[in-house]
Image 1 (cartoon, rainbow, N blue to C red):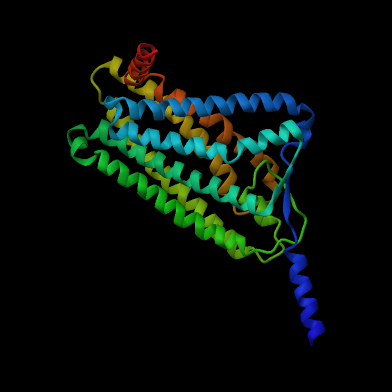
Image 2: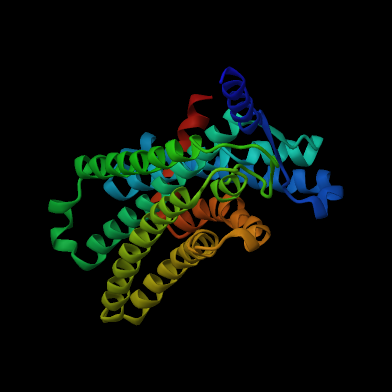
Length: 321
């Protein structure tokens, strides 16, 4: 009996003996490591600086302390944190070729990337509603949206994301990993991680599909309804110049939204993931590198208030010197 118990304990120990994973990243272009390091480093620094500018000017210029810019600064903060959970490790892979990541670090990266990603999607839905109210219901906007409501909505986004992703990670952490330990991705993506488990993953995969579908589709539906109403309102504007200006702004927003929703729908809203993990890596790069770089430009490029706030901030810095 004791021998049998010892054998069972040894089997469990062997099943959970994986102490680290290997991130496969992009083996086909690994010889271009230095070039890819430079490109991704510049994109990362550009994203961080662009989003930090939005955060700083929002909280240093009282004219920008409105619901729209508070939501935008919260969105920028999450973008900075989101890419910081993934890109530094990718840069180290390109530069040094070090592809290993400890088991606990892998789960931690997975948690924060999905937690922050969920917040970003919920915030996009809230920002779309804010724009809908401002454009379609201007007379009621001030009575509905204020700073208190903005902070409440941001807290709701954080809370809902935390509950959903924590429950998901608890399920994933209970899986057994007995090998192989090569993750076919450049970060600890939960899809690839789940497929490495030697446990029965059906319930985890179902819950994962539910969470990702809920987050992406809820945000997508709200955003689509909001922007559809905005387009209808813009078409009713009497001035052709005003219509052109409004469409110019909306079209740039919709380009970024299309990139984010399109790539995430392609990656996550597929029940059968095994055969498409390689294509997921390229799509994930869009969310990790391209859209965080575009967002600061898109949301501030045609914004005269932001331009003025930046000029005023720079003027104050010069005067202090």
